[in-house]
Length: 423
Image (tube, rainbow, N blue to C red; front, side):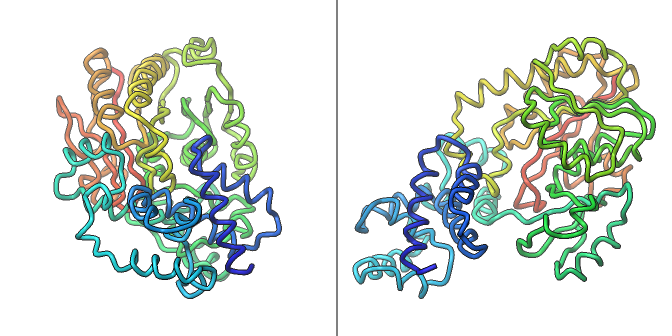
C-alpha cells in the first residue's frame, strides 16, 4: 500500500477507535473485516499505530495541537508503527518538520502526566502500592504484551511442542512460573499451525494459567468455573483433571460460551459442561450447593491488569464503574461460595490491579464467612513446584497470602487471587 494511503487508513481507524463506543480490539477487527484486501503488514501497522495512540494518548494530545491537519491524522503520525522514512514519504514538509520537533523532545522535560499516560484517578492507587516501582510499571505498560501459549498436557508435553513449533519456524521458550507455558517470539499466525489446529496449544497469558494451576483440580472431582467466559481457564482445568470428573463452565453470557465450543472441540476434552446461567443465583447453582470440590471465580472486573493488551480500558473505565463492579464481585463470590462442599477449595481472582477489586473483596468475604479458612497462596503454589512462588505473592490479614502478579515484575498481565478451604 502506498504510504499516503496507509497513513490515511491509520487516521481513519484512530478516529473510529477514539470514539470509545466499543473495545479497541473489536473496532480493529471490524475494520479488518470491512477491508479484506489489507495484507498482513498493513494490518500490523494499522493495529500497532492505534494501540500506540491509546498507550500514549495524553502525550500525543499534548503534542498534536502544534501540528496541522485533522487531529486524528496528527495522532496517527505520532503513533505510526513503521520506518520513519516510510512515514515521512507520506508527509508534507510542514508535517515532517513538526514530527522532527516532536521526536526531539526530551522526556525529562515533560509533565508527569505526559510521561505516565494514565488517568489521574488510577495513578494514586498504583503509586500507593508500588512506590518507586511505579515508573517501572509505566514502562512495561508502554510495551505490547508477549504471546503466551498453554500446552494442552492432556495429550502433549511442553518440550515436545516447543520442538514442533521450532520446526515450523516459531521460536518459543518455557516461561519461569507455569509448567504449561511457552512464550513465543514475535507474533506469528498461531492459528495456522498444526499444533493449534489439533489442540496442542491455546493462547493464554502465563498469569491466567497460574490461576488454573492454583485451583489444583484433581482427577474425578466436581469442579466449577463460575465465570468461564471464552473458557481459557476452563480448558486448562479440564486438562489438569486428565479429562475425568465433571467440570461446569458457567457464565451469564451465552455469546461468550459460544466462543468456547471450537476451543473445546480442539482440546479433546469430554469432561467440560458449558452452561449459560441467568445470574449468580440461578436455579442450577442452587441444585449444586455444597456438592462441588473446587470453585474458581474469575470475576468480571475493570481489566486494568491487561493494559498492555487493552490500553483503551484506562480511558473507558472510571471510578464509578469500578465501584459498581465491586458490588457485583462481592455478590458473585458470595453465590459461588455456596457451591463449595466441606474440605473444598474456593479461589477468587481478577485481572485488576486495584485493591478495592482484590484485597478488599477477599477481606470482606473472609470476615463474613469464618467457615472458609484462608490459605497461603504462596505455599499452595510452592507445593505445586512453581518456581519462586513466594515472589508472586503478598501477605494479607489473618495469615492469608494472595497471588499478586505485575507486568513489570513477573512479565505477566496483572492478576490477583485469593484462596480458601471450607471447613
